[in-house]
Image (tube, rainbow, N blue to C red; front, side):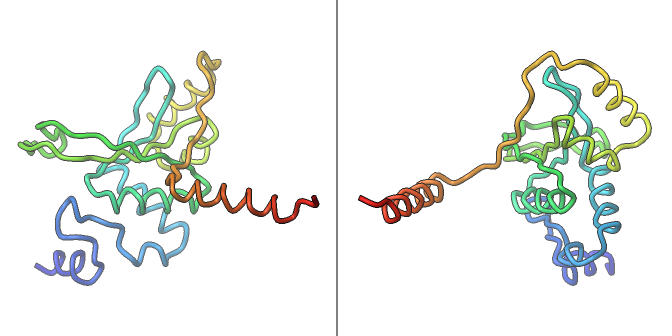
Length: 173
């Protein structure tokens, strides 16, 4: 139908879950509309988790490209998120009643630690904000969580080598 054509042909959002991606137009709209897109995605494929290490806002997908694009959109609001890759087991999707028979890679875009979560409150509904406020009011009982940005080893080696060569070049002997 027309909606299919709109999303998959015109907006190039992918034709199945593994090919799903953020429509190109979302990267070219106002911040307010970007937030609305992220909130809508969160309402459909996101959740809030309480763990021993704290409160988390999670966006789930089986598309690696979509996970990367969600990271980029969050960064545009100063929110540093992480991607966690895992293998899903056959399971029932509660929201839709759909049963997934096969195992596949899945990605969780995770926002955690109080500083990052405080920037993300617009994601949450009233009940979830209340949970977050309770979490923030508690004293930390664990080591603080530090955000890590994954770096490819080859790139790291190349930059360290450049840095060392720069020091040697500028060193007066």
